[in-house]
Amino acid sequence: MGCTRVVERVLAAVGQLDQAPSKFEPSLDVPNGGVLWAVPALLQNGLLRHAREYFSLPKGYYGLIHVFLLLGYMALARIKSIEQLRYRPPGEMGSLMGLDRIPEVRTLRSKVKLLAREEPVKEWSRTLSREWMEGDEEAAGVLYVDGHVRVYHGSQTPLPRRYVARQRLCLRGTTDYWVNDQLGRPFFVISTPFTSGLLQMLKGDVIPRLLEDVPGQPTSEQIEADPLLHRFTIVFDREGYSPQFIKEMWGLRIACLTYHKYPKDDWPVSEFHERTVRMPYVGEVRMQLAERGVLLGNTVWTREIRKLSESGHQTSIIGTDYASDGPYIAAHMFSRWSQENFFKYMRQHFNIDGLMAYATEPLDETGMVVNPAYRKLESQIKSKAAKLGRKRAEFGTIVLQDDLNSKGMAQYERRKASVREDIDFLKKDLEDLKQKRKKTQKHIPPADLPDEQRFTQVAPTRKQFMDTIRMIAYRAETAMAIVLRDILARSDDARSLLREIFTTEADLIPDEEQQTLTIRLHHLANHLSDEAAQFLADQINASETCYPGTNLRLKCKLVSQRNP
Image (cartoon, rainbow, N blue to C red; front, side, top):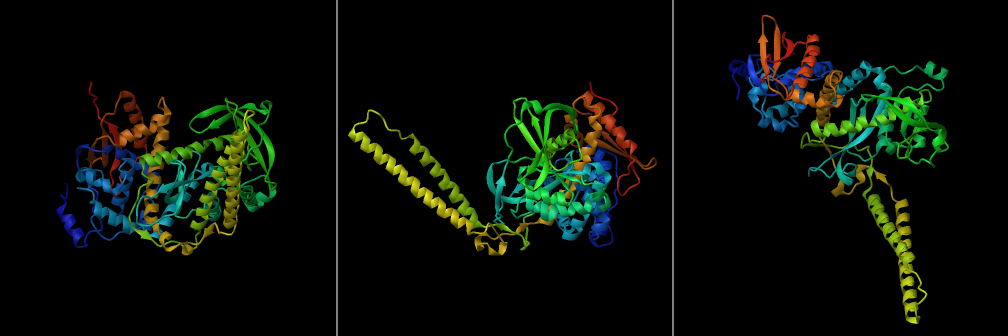
């Protein structure tokens, strides 16, 4: 159970110890020991870079370094919540940080609560986002924006319902709007309990932040000199389709790229030509592409690029990037799968839908929510319209037969008249409902909601803090996966191999004289995996990274002998 460093714990209890130093001891077969191979990547992606600048903890046994490293290890080792630490050996986990044991669940929760204060978390997250963008200006030039609904099953507050595409249901929850690059790496996320939609979030939150943070934007003089030059490109799905919005963005010299929501007739096949399109990870692919200039909504000229599939289906893309060639634009649009895969991977492995706390916080009253009365009218209109459609279909199936006698003729006329009467009543009801909907506001302030439907938000700052930790862990894993892709026969195996490494046992061998900490990983599933792991170890060793808080240089290797 640990707790062997008694003197230091006593000093911490009386307030005489800032934090316990990391002291590694020789340890064999440490569970999840392979996660230490990710320490250089975690540090490179900013796990501890600004920790002391924005955060502080009171004196105690566990300090900032310990908490941040433990949360990073948990993310990579697929320990999806703090609660799951109850079922992990605390002494073995403590060995990964040079401690006798990790903090108890209650202790770790209290420290996360102290760290997750609104202003420090926002500034820390934004600083890291800017640094990630500055570190790869080319990737920051094309940004993918999409919403992800995080369903809430609790009873603390009646959050508004929103449509969840993956479940095809309207469920209570919050919406996270993620901004990623072409490789799926996240830059930042903005969460909201409101149901304002993608367009409103783009206008009010995402675009103003990007205008400030995206590096390498052209100057005003350069924009004036070149009428086709843009600052950066944002890519989004059909939910954000709006000719007026696209025009507004080009007024700011921001290029938009999305699917055409209302494409017209198919183009002649003779217009399509085979072009080479370079996709990330996949490499070069051949596509049948065609292009035209289109006046969108009588407001803005756009480029419409269509892809012809083998089945004959034409996928229509519109954009205001007037300088790039067609294949380059097609590559950006069809790379949206990277963000969809990111959502799926983060749900499955990093628990982005998990509830961080049961606490709720007051709501920003300046936001707008869907009026429940408007939503009720919408539901009634859809129901009436469906009934009207069925009645009209029934009316059309009533056909006069040639061989009907006088009795049959009378029955035919009564049936037609009855269905016609039902149709007239439904049409009148439908028109009345539509008139009521016109007079009803679609969005209202939260203060105008009925008392039983008023809601609060669920610990947003703590979620933002943990989301930032997860982003760092995901980017660290991505960086390591890119290294492995060069030598693996199947590049898609990189992440699964890393998951195996992070959860494999390892021996920890500190050497104070040589100032090294050797993480000797046990053998993996097969010889090819061992070879890939050894290649990764060589790259990690070349970085000459010291374990945080110590002068021990990390040295990664595999055990010397493999069982036959």
